[in-house]
Length: 372
Image 1 (cartoon, rainbow, N blue to C red):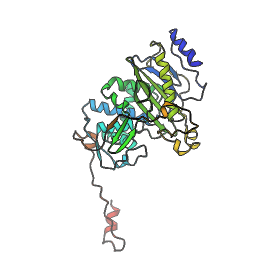
Image 2 (cartoon, rainbow, N blue to C red; image 1 turned 180 degrees about the horizontal axis):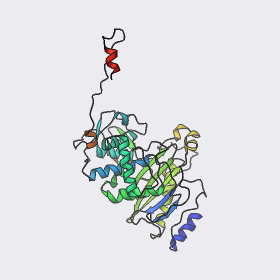
Image 3 (cartoon, one colour; image 1 turned 90 degrees about the horizontal axis):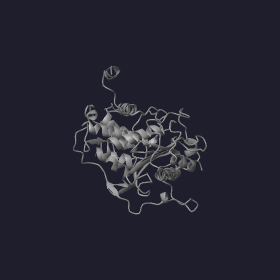
Image 4 (spheres, helix red, strand yellow; image 1 turned 30 degrees about the horizontal axis):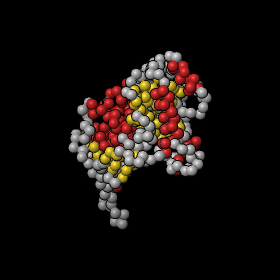
């Protein structure tokens, strides 16, 4: 009823207003028109939230800026570092030292949400995780993302990595405005790596009419996040949904918002730039107990659980019968090495020789080691 009443207000030309905050146990949401920046609907848009893998959109933005500056090329090598290879799933599982093209790395990061690849992109372009995070935060500040802070490029949980629905809307706008040539990356239905196939975790893609992106995110502390975009009749809407209970519900909430937006008049009085802070802007809500402590491990994943007879029917539970796959993989990186990676001193991965314990050490060894 609240949303129907809200749409009637929009039809009368009223200013877009937040839904009644706290009226339901829902996380922050925002729905906006990408072309005009007009906000159609929002709830707790300035509340801090853990972004999880939505962070990878900023990683992509920094990489796109590096491409635009001539710092790297799409065929530049992204080397899997030892640190990156050790990141937990979701991941590609490449070994330290293996190399991929930057464009393939970006696709694996955005579609498979690969944490190891995201970290490799960050360390290759930034030199270190910390240095890349500085670039992420510099871009966030430049874009006006005042409620956002990053410490890593993949979104693995840190209490110091947070954002807001409104800030994510600014980031989405910048990505699609500044780098439209990469917009197809967000709409890939699945990846093929040799014989392995990886469907897009964004269940809108291939199932919702006009869906063309953008990214999912999940850690126990954030719940299930989704940025979903769709274009119909030349009009692109973006729904940002944070803190849902599972992969299906976040998709259904985003689809419902998009439906309402496409049914509403195109005009709205409030823009992202004009939207003023309101409500609770304090520390992010920690959803770990609700999302992970109380649920079986099978439900603690970006991949939707297999439907059972008791589960409500949803088009978003159905697997795509013939997904359009994009082939990615290792090799083919013939472009320039990222300067930050090239500047690092490379050491051979050979263990330092140790004196055999069953033989007496040579005279003077202990004194020499004490000087190191």
